[in-house]
Structures are given as C-alpha cells and as structure tokens.
Length: 235
Ligand code: ATP
Figure 1 (tube, helix red, strand yellow):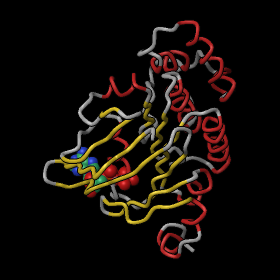
Figure 2 (cartoon, protein in one colour; figure 1 turned 45 degrees about the horizontal axis):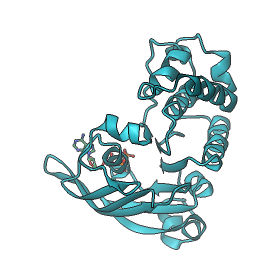
Figure 3 (cartoon, protein in one colour; figure 1 turned 180 degrees about the vertical axis):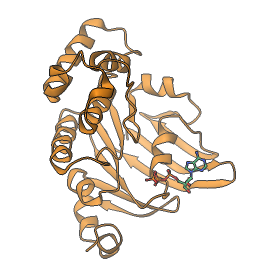
C-alpha cells in the first residue's frame, strides 16, 4: 500500500474535523474524496501532507509513519499537495513558480527535463513562462499550481478542488491532464465538490460526512449508489 490512514482523528482546538478516517491508496491508484462543505476532505489532505497532525490514529506512506513529520519532509518523501485556491506566488513569473516546486531536489538535469514535461502537459505555461503569475487567468493559475507540484516529482499528487470556479472547457482540459499524470505512474488523491467529475476520473472513492467515511467503493459503483446520486450528484 502506498498510503494508509488508520483511524485518523484531527482536532482544530475543540472541533473534531476528522473522527476516525481509514483509507488506503495503492501505488498508481487514483482515489477521490467527495462530500459536502465541512465534511473533512481538506483536513484529510492537510493531515497527509503534515500541515495538521492527527490527535489520534496513524498515517503511513510507503510503509513509513508520517503523521508526526513536518510538511517539508513529507514533500521530500514524494507527496505533493495542491491546496484549494491555487496559491501560486503572484509576483513571481511562471518559470520562477515552477522552480519553487523543485526546491527540495538537487538533480539539476532531471529538473530541467521535468520542466519540459510540465510545458508539454500545459503548453500555455511554456508560452507564458516569463509572465507574472498574477496576470494569468484562473484556469492557467490552476495549471501552474499543478505544474509546480509536479516539479517536486511526487509519487503521490493530492489536489484540493482543482475545478473550483473554472469554466467547463478548462475543467475538461485539467481533468484529462490529471488522467494522463496518473497513467504516467503518479498516484492521485482528488478532493472535489464536483462529484460527477471526480467519480469519472477516479478508480475508487470515499464519501466523507462529518469527519467520517460514510461510504466507499469503486467509482462506478458509487456513481450508481442511490445515496450518492441523491446527495452528491443531484439526481
Ligand atoms: P470544504 O470543501 O468547505 O473545504 P471540507 O470537506 O474540505 O470542506 P474541512 O475544510 O476539512 O472540510 O473542514 C472540516 C471541519 O473542520 C469543518 O467543521 C470546519 O469548519 C473545521 N475547520 C476546518 N479548518 C479549520 C480551522 N483552521 N480552524 C477551525 N476549524 C476548522
């Protein structure tokens, strides 16, 4: 198992954001976390990337405990997190933003090759490499945020609501790139409000409700599940 969460609790002061979350991800897998606002999806990603620490439970990556590790060590181990709201550095250029993603690496030649790969996935970033990030459109900034995460050469890429506020055409483009990234061997955890999109892309899904896994299963099965259809697909 590449990633395993076992009975994870996270508290923000007295608020229990996660109340015993257990989930697994195989190497090369693509899972999605769906659920309504406040269900604990972002907190799950934050716990994996070390931005918050569980008050109880365990998180293991590649067989090693990571739930007490700081975020930079977790990034070095191969977990990259694209947070909600595409927080790129607005005053840095596209290429400078991309290089910040590689700050944990020393393999200069490979970094250059990975930069070319990012430009191949997102041609618009190559065309605008000298432009300040703040001058990009929302969709382009999301692409930059994903590209920057890829520059860390992650084994696991976690994305929080990449489709938020974007036009359907851009969402489609980003979705197909995520599939491609996964086909290239990077494991993916996708947090999405857009459950339909998420279940189309992922192989397996977890439905979070008030900090707990209410339901899990193959994405196709969840898509046909009565509760999921009513609560999250609006059918
Ligand atoms: P959203 O899509 O709105 O981000 P989510 O499913 O990602 O929802 P979380 O953001 O993980 O949910 O929030 C889980 C719970 O923790 C919610 O009750 C939320 O109010 C609370 N929470 C989140 N962040 C904090 C914080 N920094 N301080 C206090 N409570 C928080």
